[in-house]
Image (cartoon, rainbow, N blue to C red; front, side, top):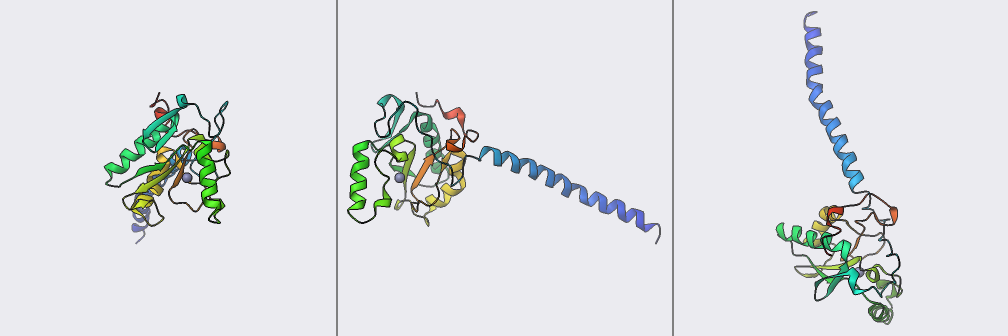
Length: 198
Ligand SMILES: [Zn+2]
C-alpha cells in the first residue's frame, strides 16, 4: 500500500494538468473577449459627431444602405457586414429606419405624443437617429420583437459588429452603433470597416 501512494499522487497531478491548462486558456480568451466587447454595454451610447448638428448631417457623411436607411459612413461597414452575417445564418434582418433628419424627428415625436407615448421618440435634436448611428430593424415577421428569431440572433452577434442596445429603451428593434468605442471611450470594434464606405 505504501508504494501505491506516490503513484496515486502522480496520477492525480497528471489528471489535473489538462484542467489547469483549460482554465488558463479560457481565462485568456475571456479577457480578450471582454476587451473587444467593452463598448457593448447597456450604459454605452453613440458619440456625437464633432462639428455637425443632430438631424442636419451633410450628405457627405452619410451612406445610403437602402431606400429607408442612411447611416453615418464609419458605421456603414458594420451594418452591412452584420446584415450579411445574419443572412448567412438564415436570419432575415433589414433596416426599417436609420438616419432621421430634424423634420423627421419632429414628425415622430408628435406622432407618439399624440398617442400619449412621448417616450417612444427622442426630443427632436437629441436622438441617436439624428446622428445616423441608430437603426430600427425588422425581421421576417416585421419589426424585431423580443421573441423574434432576429432579436435572438442580434443578442448573440450584434456586439461583434459594434451594435449595442441601450438600457431602459423597451424597443427590441432599436440598435445603436458604438463601434468607435462610444461615450465610454472603449476599444473600437471592427475598426477595419470604418472606411468601408467612403
Ligand atoms: Zn430607433
